[in-house]
Amino acid sequence: MKVLISEAQLSERIHALGAELTAHYAAVDEPLVLVGVLRGSFVFMADLARAMDCPLEVDFMSASSYGDGTVSSGDVKLKTDLQKPIEGRHVLVVEDIVDTGHTLAKLRSILEARQPASLRFVSLLDKPSRRENGEAADWIGFTIEDHFVVGYGLDEAGLNRNVPYVGVKTND
Ligand code: 5GP
Picture 1 (cartoon, protein in one colour):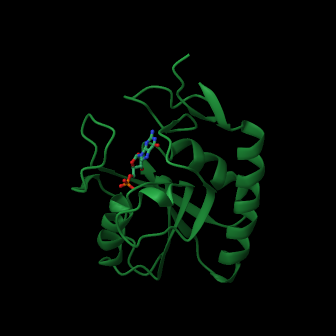
Picture 2 (tube, helix red, strand yellow; picture 1 turned 45 degrees about the vertical axis):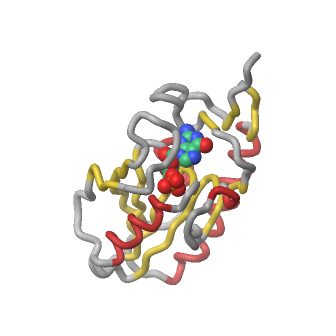
Picture 3 (cartoon, rainbow, N blue to C red; picture 1 turned 120 degrees about the horizontal axis):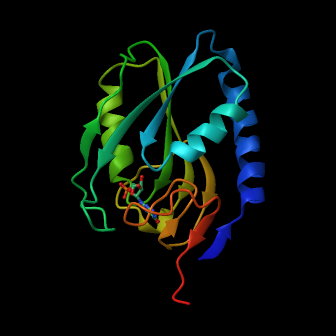
């Protein structure tokens, strides 16, 4: 596996993002709801939440469009829903990667319908060259080329989520 983004680069960027998000939400006088999109965001979410210095709750949801393959079908399904209502709450959705943008579009429409006070998205990674719609996260950790990446929460057929850096599979 080739290292694309090292542990040190991840840590530095996530601390900067945490500070930016803390400043952004400083004006909100009630706890924020961080919504992790399982399973790929679990490592990023754990680090980002601890880099944020503001009152927050966590909740999780999951969506799936890949089946067993690695190419998004565009037919995104909600698999696991939030535990609590978000009406009137400030919601920040934490994603691992925005690829085609179909997952983000689906989550946005599901969550917007519940009338949160605000709804924003932060994604560790962004692959803009793969986008099939006009979606974009509000905050992005790293913009990357069109590689299939693994590690730091992202899997390859269920494995390698525990690799501590973001890597690209090589043939050697
Ligand atoms: P989208 O709906 O934007 O095409 O895809 C979003 C989901 O596809 C991500 O949350 C992630 O689970 C998966 N995905 C997209 N690109 C990659 C990648 O390069 N590596 C891995 N492991 N998952 C990816």
